Length: 124
Image 1 (tube, rainbow, N blue to C red):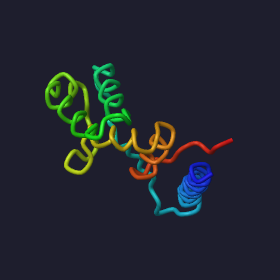
Image 2: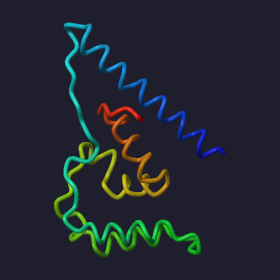
Image 3: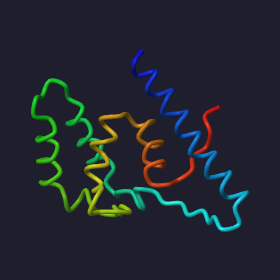
Image 4: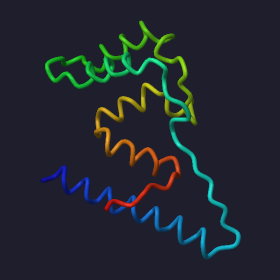
């Protein structure tokens, strides 16, 4: 129940943000919409990032985050090819992928948009 209630509240918050952007854009002459996303470009080696996520999700490993980061460090040059994030000093791609593992892919896509000031489609 807790997960569904949290997801429901997140959806309502995201819809509210989206409505605020639409409202300001239409009614205020001085409001200019700018849309940013945390991830500017995705990696060329998605398969390595999938392995990274698999390591992070393994409940049998107590040190799974440490193992995932060691995997990343040993494959960093390959994994970072093509990656560009909006604010690398704050959110590295690895940090964003850890967040994705923690909150789930669907919520991650929505939360990333809100966090980075990108309007999203409504949930219908």
